[in-house]
Image (cartoon, rainbow, N blue to C red; front, side, top):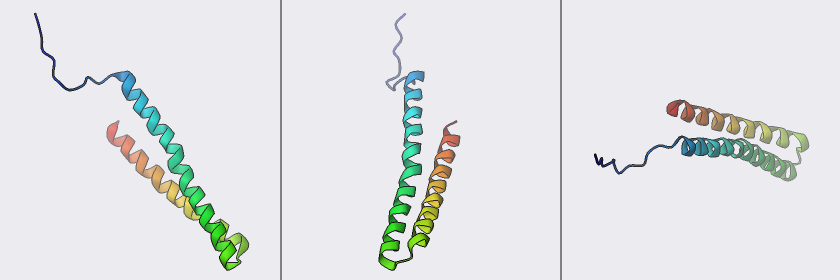
Length: 82
């Protein structure tokens, strides 16, 4: 007997694993970029205002907060799809 399958793609377990791997690799970018941006902002503030360690420390703290919120957003997305 001939059966016509629906037009939509079948979900392949291999394909799903590849997309999850890409999401995990993006996690590193989402964590590192805010830290580097905060560090750059802190160095800029230190050079312009002359407050040597305070700008770098506050920039890194700001970047860490940004990284935490990115991580929280990613965990929420993973929990929706799990």
